[in-house]
Image 1: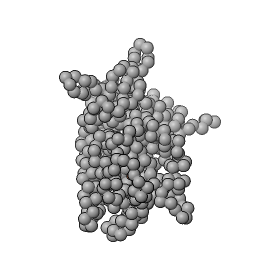
Image 2: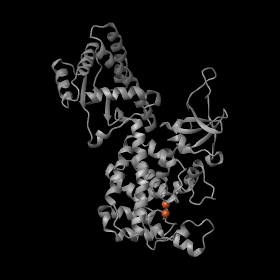
Image 3: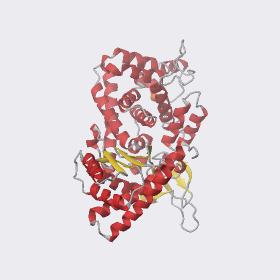
Image 4: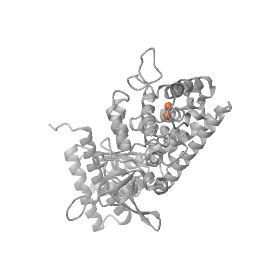
Length: 482
Ligand SMILES: [Fe+2]
Ligand SMILES: [Fe+2]
């Protein structure tokens, strides 16, 4: 009997087998698009692909690849695509997408001739025809080929906005800065007791969710960069982003994710009722002032209750505003007379709020914590202040060195983290954009991958020694990381 594998081992295995298969299959497909079926090169490519297919059938029993949006599932487990394989997967994805084929299933060992038929059928499919999969399966049946079947590529309503990574970055930035502008507008409206433009906020959060579903790195990166000066506005947007990305990672459905974003965006809405001089005070607050500050969750809830514009959202919004300082074990504020559980939205926003508040302190003279330290505090208070399950997911999401972190390397170079690898074991080996000092200013150097090893010694070429405070070095992170 086969030994039980842990989910991580499963994921690893599926990624490995799936990657091998995709590489060989894609090569064969390209070959079939270029050469006719009698070409010797095709014979060779078929042989290579066949080897992998039949090995997988022997060990796993079947082979099933499914594409959902730009995610690949191999035998029903999501594959983690390695950075160096990404271009190949993207090219493969394009070919499959053109043909509207989203599933390939091999049910038994294939013969050379079956595979040859199959690859020429698939390569010859008409572009964009939604019934290609029916046609293809029919043809396979007619030829008595029972070893393989295909399925349709499911399309999603919002997929037309699928954008390439550069556009994606631009688009994410637009959302980020529009959200900041919107928060300013909302705060003004509240202070002048005008109607709120809730529709606009909802639309923005829906767009944010769409980009997070495709790639969360740019929005996360924007939230991680600690350079922006207008605390309140940025804080709200950052909390919304952290909350939505975290929500996405624990599987909250799309519709609710945008609600979570809204709740995050307005969690501190009660602070609009606190006089500015208390909010911005840099000296120690008096006990009365503290009491006022600690009252903001209640004031926020009252504000939300009073405003009709929230509609179906209002309960969720109140969760965010009321619960974000309650703490998991209810030892925070406001003090409750009757004990109850903090809602999921409340627990998520608590984490997002805590992280962002410590990483970018409101008051200038307070020392900002480095991210590792905050994650450490979170772990320590896991189960007391924070939901222990969410803490784990959050730490994974931020990574040991978050995007935008300034780091010192063992080569004495400094750089900024620009990409984090998804595999947990490589979390401390991100991609780093080197920075060097020349003619009186800092300049962008090469982007290096800390996974790279020296060819002779097999040791890692570069490793992070420690994180640095960009303020100390007068480096404007935003300039380099965006
Ligand atoms: Fe707060
Ligand atoms: Fe907050």
